Image (tube, rainbow, N blue to C red):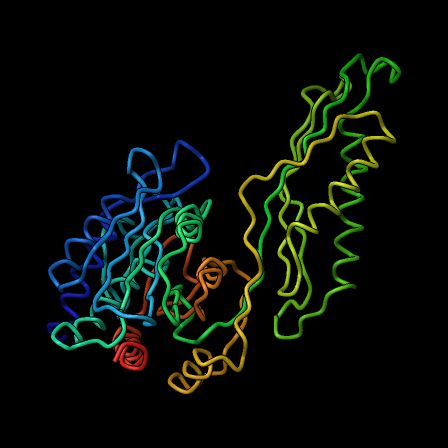
Amino acid sequence: MPDSHKRLVEQLDQLVSTPSVSSPDPSWDQGNRQVIDLLATWLVTMGFSVEIQDVTPDGAKANLIATLGSGPGGLVLSGHADTVPFDEGRWSSDPLRLTERDNRLYGLGSTDMKGFFPVALAAASAFQEKDLKQPLIILATADEESSMRGARELAAAGRPKTRAAIIGEPTSLKPVRMHKGIMMESVRVTGQSGHSSDPALGNSALDGMHKVMGELITLRDELAGRYNHTLFDIPHPTLNLGCIHGGDSPNRICGKAELHFDVRMVPGTDNDSLREDILGRLDRVAQATGLDIKLVSLVDGVDAFEQAADSELVQLAESLTGHRAESVAFATEAPFMQRLGMETIVMGPGSIDRAHQPDEYIEMDQLGPAIELLRRFIQHYCQ
């Protein structure tokens, strides 16, 4: 193994061994500051100018903006410094230690997406002593796996801004130029409990929820008929009824019920308009039933993303990889980078099929090609 690859594996081991779970569940949620500080130490040694942007008041969650060179334009290589929770009992090895076997590197976040950072640093190392005409920025964000708060903070601050951005999510080194958006919502229905022997004593929240679910299923069918984006494997929006809770006893009229669902819209659609449509449908159910019905966002939505097929970045990515740019169903931070005015693609080593599950791994034979590919992007945009 070349010394550069040994260094990469050592860095990834340190990153995996530094827990940084991001979750809406407070019992799981952690900060990412130790990961950010670790990256900052390495980047300063490489000659980068490093800025740490606090995302929470206590600084436990933070973004990192590391810049080599100066001037207009340039390139951002971006990744998130958090992981999802994990079930340690289902892993074949310690999820918080990097384990090598079968030419794979196993560990939590190895592919999604701590593995991208050592690759990006290895690619950048070839330019440490060179005079860059435009800046190279390595970006690490907080809370991508939950609220995307880090990327939202960057977009609100209006920086960084370069000509192009590559988000290193695992795509098996194939460029991705579009993905669906996502909304995660809760419908909370409040009625009146009472003795089940007399329906007139109450107003069933579960009966109302049945009508709500009917409206959402009708909407799902309408969306599938209204939108067709043939570049996606599933060409229409999806609406999933994920979980439902309500009532407490078979001999009581249900007083409260709650439904969680998600919607994944295709490019060319608008989350805000869809939410207004849903609110109108829920209002009609509320008026017809006399129930109190509220729609509450579980997380702020992420818009669908599309980078033009004829843009410089997409055409360069297709030329360098030999792959036509694809679409994916999962959401990323790409819309926030694009909002800053940068041409943006999603592309990195590893497969999304390995993410968010036990025995997550990244293939070692993707590391060398990933480094060389990023070097060629840096050369194009920064030299």
